[in-house]
Structure formats: structure tokens, C-alpha cells
Length: 201
Ligand code: AMP
Image (cartoon, rainbow, N blue to C red):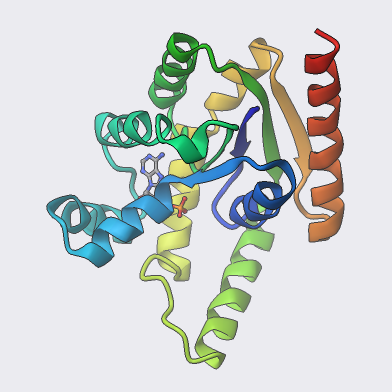
């Protein structure tokens, strides 16, 4: 079963994806995490990515699509993938559609976590304070100025994806302002519904 988690930065996609991995045996693919690994490893792509990520902009579609295309063929993705932070543009969504169709691996659902921008800024400031208090390193794009750019990019380039999936009858919206466990419960009931429909043929 393949799933997309959509939503603005800080909506809780990563948190939910990690919990779903454990319960459904699916693999979380976070393009943001993949890019941060490249930065850490000091690769050429990492150097290019860091500059773009620190501005809050998006990496070029062809780079991201290529990264996902090679990743989803690996054995740990065979039972299904939770796409987290991908697709972020209509071109990425279309490329993913073609990729999955070619491989005969349909999308079960696209779940959008809806959270308002004030709440996202509050969450960011809280996360940064907690990370600093724990003596850990703060992500270089986790600051209010970059978050505001990321939110603008989300509104302009990523939000137009939702009508695309709405038309395909795949989109479900969840109130991402609810507590983590309540969001988790709603995602589970959507996926259980998809699973039983799939097994009923
Ligand atoms: P995230 O961890 O998902 O918030 O992503 C952090 C940053 O990585 C984003 O602000 C972008 O600069 C870059 N990035 C992650 N995923 C994508 C994507 N699908 N397309 C383009 N850029 C991306």
C-alpha cells in the first residue's frame, strides 16, 4: 500500500509517517531526510541542496524525481511507501503517478494534514527551544524567517497539488491541529478502510 502525506512544513507528516512504518510495515521516504543525508555526507548534491534548503526554496524537480525513482525499487519499499515531503509540485505528482503506474503499484490514498500558519510558527519556535534545551543541533532551515519562505513556497507550488488528487478521488483531509494520537487514529481508519476494500477485490 502506497500513501502520500501532504501538508505544510511542521504539520506532523514525519511524526505520523514514523508511527505508520511500525504499524503497517510501510517505508517512510522523506525527501527532506534524503537531502539532509547528502548534506551530511558532503556530496556535490548536498552542497547544492544546502544552499536551496537554507533559503526555503525547492530543489529542481528532475533531481528529486530521480532520487525517488531509484529509491522505491529497493527491497525495503516492496511492502509500500509513505511519501513524506514528496511530491511538492504538480510536475512531481505527475511523475510519481507515471512511475507507480509503470511499476503496477497504485496509490492507496493521499492524506492532507491541515494546520494553520500561526500554529506552524508556534510549533517551530517550541521545537527550536526544546532542541536547544536538549543541547542538540537545530536544523539550519528551522528558523522563523526560513519557515515563512517555506510556507510561501508551500502555498504557491505545493498547495496546487491537492485539486490534482481531489479529481482522482484520492484526497482525504484531516485536521492536523488535533493531538498527535487523534490524527494517528484518523489516518489509521482511512488506511484500514483502504486495506479492507483492496482485499475485498
Ligand atoms: P522537509 O524536511 O520535507 O521540510 O524538506 C526540507 C527542504 O528540503 C525543503 O524546504 C526543500 O528545500 C527540500 N525538499 C524536500 N523535499 C523536496 C521536494 N519534494 N522537492 C523539492 N525540494 C524538496
